[in-house]
Length: 162
Image (cartoon, rainbow, N blue to C red; front, side, top):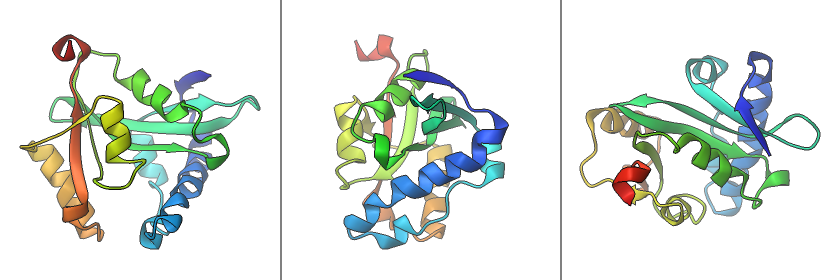
């Protein structure tokens, strides 16, 4: 699977991937999450966005990252349902965790393909969130995400994990 930086013309298509991948929340009894708007084109353009390219030569998944308090922060990772459960999301996460920086994200605590999945990839819940992570979680709460259902997680650099 080829992983490369997203091209500006692909950003609207990435929104469609995010919308399609969000449908799984409907089956989990969280229709409000499935109905949530995808990252805006402006937000996508502000972030470093990597795409996984499928056999057809088009993106089938993406990961949008940025800097939060000196760590690489995953703002969004989405895999089109037609390519789910093939390790593509894990490959994107591995791609952005190869560096010497910690990687952080916020996610749902109890949704199987959220915190439990990231734990299997080596992420751990953050006990004391940094100011930047706290701000992200406040912004999520302002959009209606219940803070009790959310968790900030971190994957330490490889040299620290060993």
